[in-house]
Length: 528
Ligand code: G4P
Image (cartoon, rainbow, N blue to C red; front, side):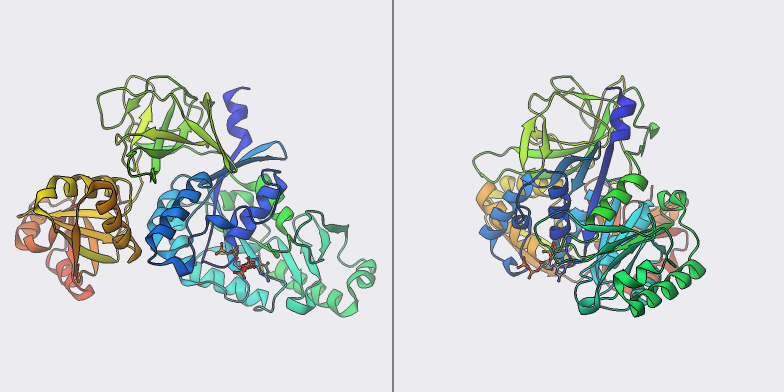
């Protein structure tokens, strides 16, 4: 098959949600449609349970399971679908943000009773920043929830994106009768059904057809007709281009656990979602059909067995064709690399592949050559992709060595762990002080555990009361140098040797901004 056809065939996306909205359930139903799994419950184990907050072994065990299910590929309707899993646990949010750089679109799940929740807002912020096309699935319609119009308003307000319903619920909770598919103009009646993947679909050419009264009853029909009129009055017709630009989010309603509305979602998704897109690099915009192969590492997973230090680097292919046992440029090293056992991830199986195409995610065995954001490519020059952002951590701790004999091991360990993206490392001079920043408390426990068990180093953490790490840009180099001199104790360097300002409070950040007006402070490193 030609590379154009391979690209056209692929859809690479992530399902994102606040924990408990139904991500695991929806993923599983999608896999059932693709025939990638046969039984319900197969994906369930991938979750880092809410209760497992500080049980290392439990986390490790669950991390192990999640390697296999980090990427789930399956075929449906002639398309190859790659779902990238994102950890639901809040402390792993940074991991999710990075995964979002490797997808071309997302499906965002909202619980119809809870509406937009804290994590939904943050995830959506990342999508907006990257202009990622978003489809919203409002889930759990079989339960009592909020009024659908209120939910749509809340989505627009809190997520700062225009929405357009493409399906509409008939009732909710105990009055839930089904979903009217605005896109295809047919009616899908609800029958609680956890195992089968068939649905009862009735074609309704005209919503004013009296047959509708017979099917769902007079009062439900009347409400539906009124609501449809309202929708058509309030919302503009759906424009797929606007969705692809990330300016509007189509909305679907359903119940994942009952497998209701999932097929409509999947089929609409396949019709409108983008195929693999290019990415910006230091060599300009790289398109999927460019001749040379290229890809970037967005996730690194350590081996669970401490005796084997190898890791799996997850590579998203951006352009060209990847081939096994072929030498490629590494963005930071002069030496070329080849891979003899690249793996693909078809649902729960890993298998060695000979070739892969744009949109695919493959696993490369790595003995420490990769860090997140690295690229590999063919052609005469190495390529560096832009925009694997770091976000300001929320918790900061100074790393202290508890065993002076093992300082080398500690240095190496913390470097490798932060290369893997477990946490961010900021080095302060003088004194080579190491400040570790994370989104959640859990990472510190993971770090001390892994430093001890994998590197034989003992550490302690002292809390630092920083509010944000701020990356800085300016056209006034002199002012920046002055600032760095004046604030030495609050300045550190990140993994790429960029200066960051560790602001202790919002007020101090504001002061810095007033006193040094030519410097712009950013909460993310993705400003290039
Ligand atoms: P997550 O990955 O986003 O965290 O959510 P997950 O799919 O695990 O779903 C969270 C809970 O919501 C699960 O219940 C799941 O069964 C339920 N759920 C998912 N979709 C629907 C739906 O459409 N309707 C209703 N009523 N419930 C739904 P649980 O009690 O936590 O787990 P389980 O014991 O039922 O498996």
